[in-house]
Length: 288
Image (cartoon, rainbow, N blue to C red; front, side, top):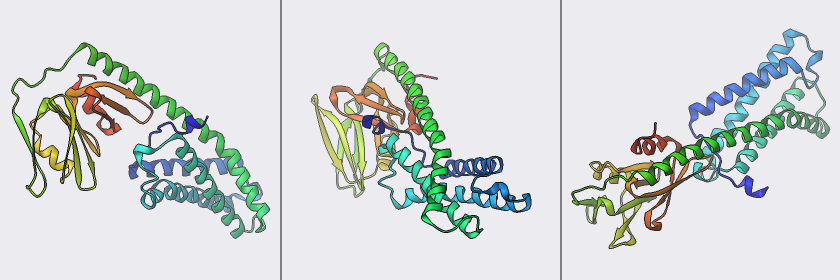
């Protein structure tokens, strides 16, 4: 069970998508409160009910943005897309339910719908959990299985093509020069000998083959600068915000609900592929 909570899970850091999700949840909350009228709302006349329902919906909107967007800005390391898991998704969503409970409790006290007490708060918290837990569990499991199935199917296609069709290596083995930002360091390599590059802070680690031995070179530069210098090499592309890769060096591809992982030839390393870069991999392998 614990291993399942550690499984990769897709996370979308895009603010626009987060805002759409928040608005959707708010509309759902408004409809829910109108239909079921919890917390004693059934006793209120329509002219009092509608503004209160709007306030509850606003609480849902604010809480969702607080958890999904503000939290991402305050705790960027926790929200890293590459390390997002099923367990983290559940944790954040149940934290969302807690904040919603606090907000609804505050509104009920303000509107004198209940007395201020721990008993009143736990009553609201219990109701929010009771109505919200099942949809959360269902939606997370559904999204996990849908993404996993999709990526595994695509990975099967990719691996089949890799095994049956070998990309032709460049016929002209011209040396490619990479320079550091200060122009004081230079690294020469042949395209077919390059595996991948990974950025960290202001440095880029280059992984390449040196007479058949997997080796590395560190340059003080950025991935953007590297890409500009290898723009004539069609097989060297960006596959992640922190990685570029030589697509001719793919040994096999694995998949999870978050995306792809590329295993390189000669055990040179494993490189993640962000969802936004998946079309580049598929296009190179002529997968529609």
